[in-house]
Image (cartoon, rainbow, N blue to C red):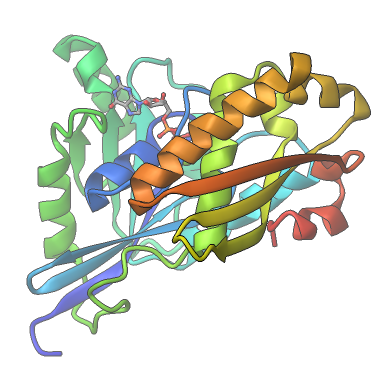
Length: 296
Ligand SMILES: Nc1nc2c(ncn2[C@@H]2O[C@H](COP(=O)(O)OP(=O)(O)O)[C@@H](O)[C@H]2O)c(=O)[nH]1
Ligand SMILES: [Mg+2]
C-alpha cells in the first residue's frame, strides 16, 4: 500500500516499570493484565493501534528477571524473540526506582541489529520531580545510543502522544498486519484466564501469585445468553491449596468474584465463572508442564 506505514514495536524493560500499563494506554483498551507486583506478564502480548495511514503493532513482554527456573527461561526467550523481530524497540525505565542490575540486563537484550531504533521511555514521571527525571535521562542516555527520549506517565497518559507520533514517523512503509477490527491476537480463553491471574496477583501474597497458572477449560453460552466459564488455577505445592482456597473457600470466592466482574465489564455480558484448584508439583520449573499451562 503506497504511503501506508506499519511495523512491530517491542516494549522492553525490567519487571514492574509499567510496560503493560503503557500497552493498554496506547491501544486504549485493557489487553494486558497489570499489577503492583513484578513479573505479572509471562507471554508476549500483542496490542494493535490503528491510525489513519499507519498501523503500530505493540508487543508487550515479560520483564527481565534473573532466576534459573524454567518459567523464567521461558520468559527470557519471549523477550529475546521479540527483540530479534521488531522494527522499533522501546526501552522502558521506572524513574521511581534506582537503575539496577535488571535494567542493565535489559539494555543488553535490546535488538542486536543496530539499524533497529531504540526509544527511551522514562515512566512514572507523575510520581517524582522534574530534577529526578532529568538525572535518570542523563544516566540512561550515557549508557545507550537512543533514537529519542520520552518522559511518560502510563497511568495518566502524559507524554504518550509524543511517543506514538515519533513511532508513527519512524515506521517502515508496509501493509497492515491486522484487520481494522482486531486489537490483539490473543484467543478469548487466554485473555479471560489472564484476568483471573491478575486477580490472583492482586489478592494473594508472597510466592502464591508466582506459583499460579490459569487455564480456561470450559467456555459455553447458555440458552439465556449467559456465558459459562470454567477455569483451573494450578499451583505448585499441596501446602498452597489452603491459601488459595481460603477459609471456607473465601479466597477463591474473592478471586472469582473480582474476575467475573471484570470479565462481565469487558465483554458486556453476564458471566458464570467456576474456578477449580489443582496441584501440579513444581510446574514452574518443569519444561513439560509449562506447555500444559500455555507457556510454549
Ligand atoms: N504512578 C504510576 N504508576 C504506574 C505507571 N505505570 C505503571 N504504573 C503502576 O506500576 C505497576 C506495574 O505496572 P505494569 O504495567 O504491570 O508493569 P510491567 O511489569 O512493566 O508490565 C502497576 O501497579 C501500575 O499501575 C505510571 O506511569 N505512574
Ligand atoms: Mg507486564
